[in-house]
Length: 111
Length: 109
Image 1: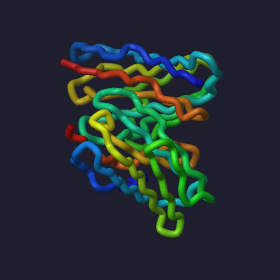
Image 2: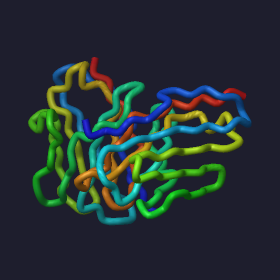
Image 3: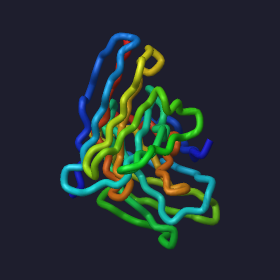
Image 4: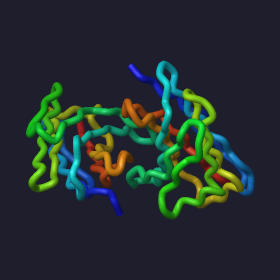
């Protein structure tokens, strides 16, 4: 079946640095990907939809300059958290839009 | 918020008992899905029920859908400690997969 590979699974970074999270569709082509953020004990909140070859669509309240999304190929979508701060610490997870397949998630801790 | 509501928010039961979780949503749907998430892990797709279906089974899972009430339920029968996880319903709204608040299920051995 469809597999989405997400890396890294966890990352600790210093405040002010940027972190890139990758999601790859391994055996299918994903023209769009959903990116979610999940705080402890809460549900998944959709942040944005990445579109291959065009700009991502961001949800209301999500800073597009802070959460840079790139979908340069049919198999790779990336989320870069720029100038990360402790409040950005969260669980980030991607999903292909067609197959309802999720990556394993990335635990980001900003110290 | 576009998110639906789930209840209960937390449920603690003994192994062997049945667990029922409910989900309500706000818009018209083509289908509703249930997912499972173990602590700090990714999501596992459990079951999809279409809007023209009223009930669907998969192993120990039974899902119902009432489109007139915009609600769905997930029943896990003969629960096991390994069923301990968070369970979320999700619907597609405007092409986006939107999740409910989730139910945290704890099954005690």
